[in-house]
Image (cartoon, rainbow, N blue to C red; front, side, top):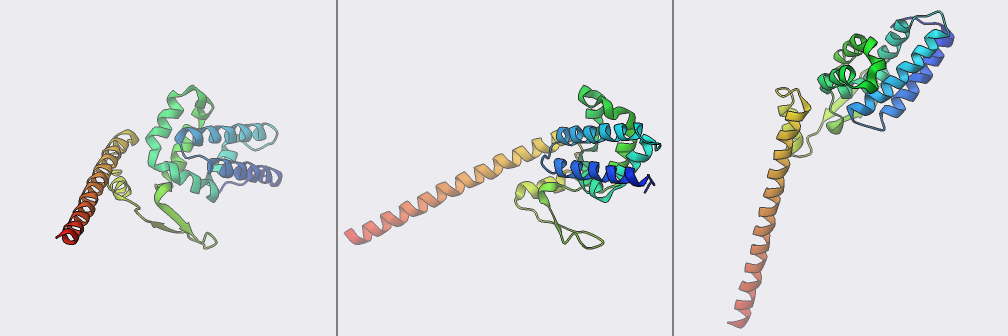
Length: 192
């Protein structure tokens, strides 16, 4: 971790606290980059008023464990993050720090927020349990290593949703037929 001044570290902790709490409210790459650009703007303002450089503040910010946990959710979408920073004018302020941001995101393992549960954060290491909740989640975890782009993965998942819905519809029809046969059988026994 990079050393910064005492008053600066207090300010960086405030920026980190705000970033972590705001990023946890959304789940899209856009939301993450908007909050990251706000935090970097605050770090730039802090670097103008002190003797430490912006790079040292950025290294301290990206090296914080709480920020790394936030980055882990988006490390699965590294290509989308890079593309948005390079091509979207809203994230122009992040472009000078693109290499640092990409390096920080690459340094954490990919964690899918929907299927990851973190237990007992007070431990020195965090236990992560992934629990597939449906066929869609199983396919998502199976397909994602081969299809690194979110669009292709989501197309496959959309097809899976259609398959699950079709299967459920067929089961409802079979259940309705079984109930009707039971009623007809009962009526025929009572009549005859």
